[in-house]
Amino acid sequence: MDIDEPTLWAYLDGQLEADADYLRVEQALAQDAALRRRLQALVEQGEAMRAAFAAKLQEPVPPHLVAAIVNAPWPPVAQQAQAEPAPQGHRPVSEAIQPSPWRRLLSHWAGVLLGQRGVPLGGAGSGSAAGGLGGAGGSGGAGAAPWLWQGLALASLAALVLVLLLWRAGPGVQAPTTQAHWAQVHAPLQDERVQVALQALPSGQVLRIGADTLELMGSFERAPGQHCRELQESRAAAGVVTQTLAVLCQTPDSGWAVAFAATETLPEGSFVTASGAQQAALQDFYDRLGAVEFLDAADEQARLAAGWQGPVPRP
Amino acid sequence: MIDPRAELISLLPRLRRFAYGLTGDGHQADDLVQTGCLKAIERWQQYQPGTSLASWMFRILQTTWLDEYRTRQRQQTDAWEEGFDELMGDDGRTQLESRSEARQVRRLVAELPEEQRAVLLLVAVEGLSYKEAASTLELPIGTVMSRLARARAKLAAGLGHASDLKGR
Image 1 (cartoon, each protein chain N blue to C red):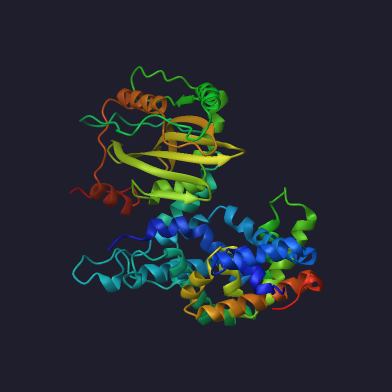
Image 2: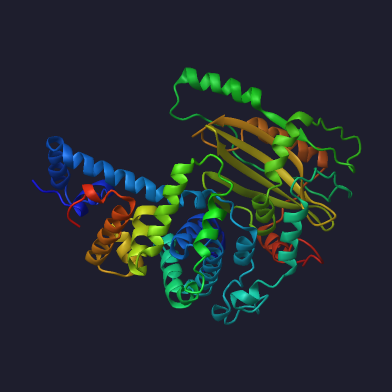
């Protein structure tokens, strides 16, 4: 029986037409050691091919690329017949690379914010109204055996780390700051992807990079001109998922610094949403702020388009 | 009309990988991805909702590469070497031998004819089915399969597995 190379590949690729074709290949493989060696060579070649490009998927995406997309005119010029004029006309790429205020900000972050300590923020407490996010509590380890889950739940409780940064303006706010854990919590939130997302992503949209996800949950104005954004991040590494619920606020130098963060580590593959404990800590944080009023989508979009700075367009 | 920008940002790692396979150069790949994404946003009304955005983007990257970039590459014969260093430089876990194999694979991919390279990348790296690759590149499925077979045979020959192989 002769099985040619394309058929063997199609077998590996799962691209054979019918079950009978798989059966035919499997029967041939069972009888023919030489064919098994040929198949093994193809397996190795396929792995070599994937491995040769795998590193590219893990690399951080350059912020300028994200910025170029965020800054692209939307809706596109050609499509906005009766819409308002585009904030900027379409430009060729070479020209689009010219620094915009936005892009200057990005390079500013890239240079300054990495490794920067959390800066306690100035400014008075913000206006009125009640705040807080709904958000489902609870985390689960679907599929895990009960005994395993119980053990892991205990472990993750033990690993629950709450970090509250002192708010200079908040009278009497004596937030516990756990320095030992602070660096762990703080560093990932200061990385460029998060900084870019804070600047660019509307709330409710999820940024996926590899196995990691980042979602902006909402935005509010803490003091006139000073914005804060709530985010939920999960990173998978070394068999565990680190789930962070955080609030970052603008610093006087136009960066974003961590004002609140609660992290929890869970076994890999867990259903990752902020736990009840994290939500409770966040609510406590909001309560200390006084009152938090989340921006509606249109208001947020306007501020996002304005780079979260300058005169805020009021509806 | 739905704003595609967030979804495009989510796709960036894969788009960069595909573009890197096409161009063989990290900087040129990012430039290509940027051009492709801006094109996609500009022509968003041509995207058919419900179809794979990744496939649509791969198609845009590939045609942009063929139409606008390929001629430039001829002047950049050293680009591959730089690309290797850039890609592999900070990956301390990678063992030397697999590094050199990865390098060899990328060199062989770079030496493939354009039309074979795109098919091979889509199927062998991006994991598209033959049918998806065919619709992405707007080719008959038979053409995809024959290009794929030729590309893989060349790769096998280059990697020294050729002695085991027969047929194409």
